[in-house]
Length: 95
Image: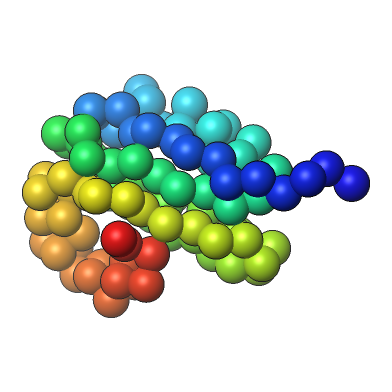
């Protein structure tokens, strides 16, 4: 069994349908290893699907007893979360 690690994933500036597959694949790979910290300070545009992807990854981490955190989300990302009414869902994973 592999040693559990804390992986860091930096989100791209634009997380749209063109970028979401790469982000998903990175999250899947990291969540197989252990806990994940997502660096979100550089996000300039984020799709609704990308936000739901992050929530899904957080749930996967929880089920596997790993930590999952979104570190220093940009103002744009925070505004998108608020606009979609997802503040409560993200509150436990933002730092």
